[in-house]
Image 1 (cartoon, rainbow, N blue to C red):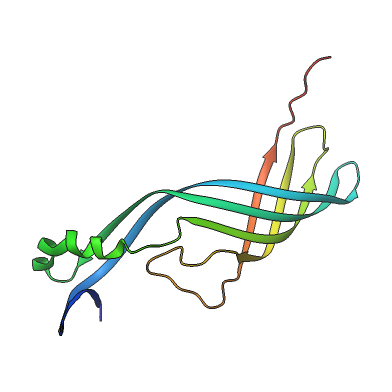
Image 2: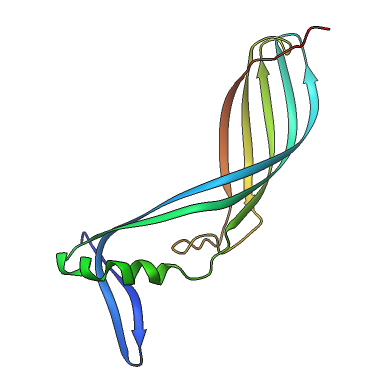
Length: 152
């Protein structure tokens, strides 16, 4: 089927459901990354670093959008969205060991490729809809570094 039922209210013995096609959440976070880096190997055009990463994110904005299977439900949209506003943890933190490869000269424009494995969440109840029992992830990122040197 192309819909699901979402329970949004219960009063005594009466339970209210919305026939829903889709729910989207737009959330904005501000993050503070902290990394401890160890230079494991370095050559002129190549380097390997190991890192311990601690990332903390703060939710600063959230907005929900619901697409109903039944057009009559749009009149209850505010009540349904209000039911999502249960207490959740607005701070998300994770820990991840990683390996970073540098390609290019360190004191010149160069690129980094970082592999984080696993990404381990350190906080829970960060999302109203999702609850994971495994809580592991994998992350790959790339960057181009442009060193800035001051004249002495």
